Image (cartoon, rainbow, N blue to C red; front, side, top):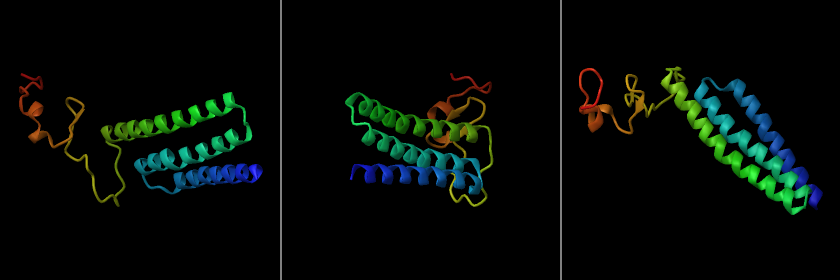
Length: 135
């Protein structure tokens, strides 16, 4: 029974990684590619590591594998967010089929600040002198 669970976890993980590689070729822009790699590949690697944790029953190995899974889930989401933000700030164009651009008008290229609301409503933006410095 243990071998069947290991085979299922590793097969599902490999299929998620395969779907990630196929989706990387099919997605039209960098933002969708980042989204695909941050979700599907993380789940695929997590499933393969789960299969390894089931195979190696020793507590030190299982605890390290679980720590790796948690680390991957935390870091990949942050890295994907930072890559997408860097792409947006450097004006990488979005796909023409994108319906909503929630960040439009919220990034100030002078100060490199991304506001949570439009800059004209932000008090920090209103208190700027003409030279760009805050009063």
